[in-house]
Amino acid sequence: MHHFKYKNGALHCEDVSIRDIADQVGTPFYLYSTATLKRHFQAFDSGFDGVDHLTCFAVKACSNIAVLNLFGQMGGGADIVSGGELFRAMKAGVDPKKIIYSGVGKTLAEMREAMYAGILMFNVESPQELDRLQDVGAELGGTARIAFRINPDVDPKTHAYISTGLAKNKFGVPAGEALQEYLRARDMENIEIVGVSCHIGSQLTQIEPFIEALRKIKVFVGRLEKEGITIKYLDLGGGVGITYDDERPPHPSDYAKAVREELADMDCTLILEPGRVISGNAGILVTEVQYTKVNSGGENDKRFVIVDAAMNDLTRPALYGAYHEIIPVREGGESMEQVDIVGPICETGDFMARDRMMPEVAQGDLLAIMSSGAYGFSMSSNYNSRLRAAEVLVSDSRFQIIRYREEVEDLLRGESISALG
Image 1 (spheres, helix red, strand yellow):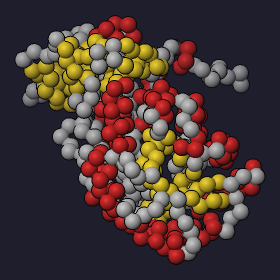
Image 2 (cartoon, rainbow, N blue to C red):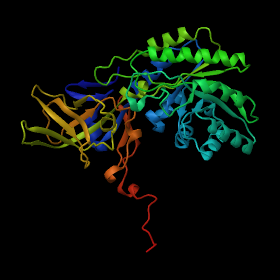
Image 3 (cartoon, helix red, strand yellow):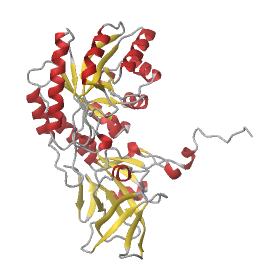
Image 4 (cartoon, rainbow, N blue to C red):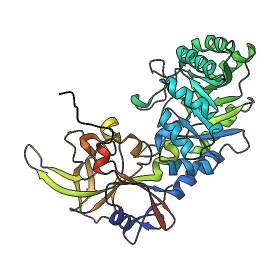
């Protein structure tokens, strides 16, 4: 459920007219609903009531510090994959003891920063990373708390680009090699083993792959116990999908029920890394129609709606061929037409939708690109030297700009004209 609804023919976010926001902020802009973010976080987290657990929002999904602060106030932590995300989480007020650090390419500097901060644990993804963490711990005179990310070789049945748990993927340590790495880590002076981690992919629409991976991890934890290695934290990652089009992902409560049943005989703290399932349907991208045109030729005329949002603002359609529902901000009439909704960038791949049946729109109309709250702004860029969009947060009848639109001077920050001749 989300809080984007038509009222008297005009799309609102909670109790605020989206047209009114556009008139004051300009377009394009990302728009998030506080009520939806809170509802989704609570719906996910409450499924594990009575179980010792920690819900760490995946910062990569939606990294604005206002959003991270909201979840932190609700008791959530953060799943990070870079030094920049650590910086964001700390600035947002997230308790460092609720921060977990994943990612295959952690640098020395990033490790130092995270150890200084006192994060909960590193999810280690290779033998060399373990060695580097030991060196950093010795250098700083501290101890790095770790879990190994185990690759269970489970097919998540999702898009190949967001599958992370197969043997051919770059993530994690193969299950067959992980025990040896745990035994190595046990003998390192500046390493403390605290957990086991697993993440098989994103936008999963079935529970079975999660349970298959979990059962493999349970067997592995049993092997660790026989070696005298006690696991305090079991990190199951994220990946629960949402509805973009006709997907039927599991409800968070059904996911929680299945996981709880499978973990009934385990004594450890459960860590969860939801991202898309919380923020995806809590945000939209609002864009204005700049032109409509018809290209004649061939067997059929081709109709285009050209908007001021582009693939640099929302890359998922171009990158994954992803579907996003697109609706008019002013409720459409009965006249429908088949169109491509495209942006201004000089790429044929710059589209929001292809061959989409839409209510007829005109220059100056606003469109809402739905389910853009995850991997929307966080994946945006300055391609074609385009200014990145504003971000706006609504709460009840009020709204606040939580990231101002970039200005042209921002495009040149850090650049200089060469004096080399």
